[in-house]
Length: 250
Ligand code: PGA
Image (cartoon, rainbow, N blue to C red; front, top):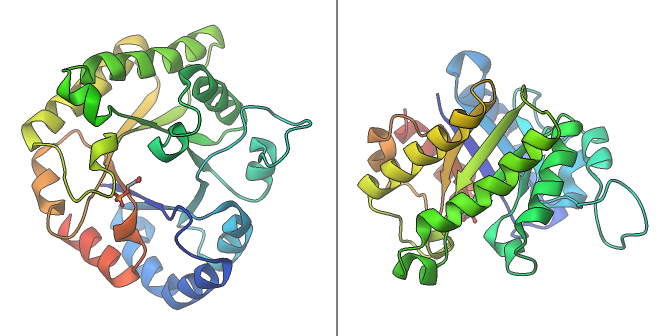
């Protein structure tokens, strides 16, 4: 079974999104009905989440692309996890590199993770190194820092029975057409899983990979047995391309 998270970023307008949902709902049900075992989580932009939830079959999950680090209050332009839950979001991406371009602060991301876990929304926490970190052999240092801030919030708040998703998304792979060498990715995925489960054997950790996944490279990930799925950006926008990727992964 694989998990596919579609991160639509700001690539579609509200009307484009409605059209996509109406045109593809039936084929999505065929592709992801319970017995097919793959899981699909659509993450549209904020204004479209409630509409997508209404238009798309319940076997497909809906997520947000970010949330506020605060629960409620005077925070202009922010979106509360409480609202996300009310409109049917069960997942939320946090720490995406495109949001880290504005604030790259692991403790803010940990605060968001805590709010999400307390609201029973599964956080999809993006971690990954920049090109510079990679060149300086700092990949594992960066990943450990990012994981430690999440781990400490979980320990402090005694949250030991919830699911979390970690998406390994090296900055340099996003939108570039370049993916990591498979043997390095295998090491990183195994490292992330072991690192978290060592602390929390009862937490359901799923590890995803994101960054330039497409129809040409999807089959190369098959040898990474402990990879639970993918976070797709541009390859998730066109339904027929996305469907091809899901089928090639089977
Ligand atoms: P990409 O984006 O698939 O277009 O590289 C992935 C992401 O940003 O999550």
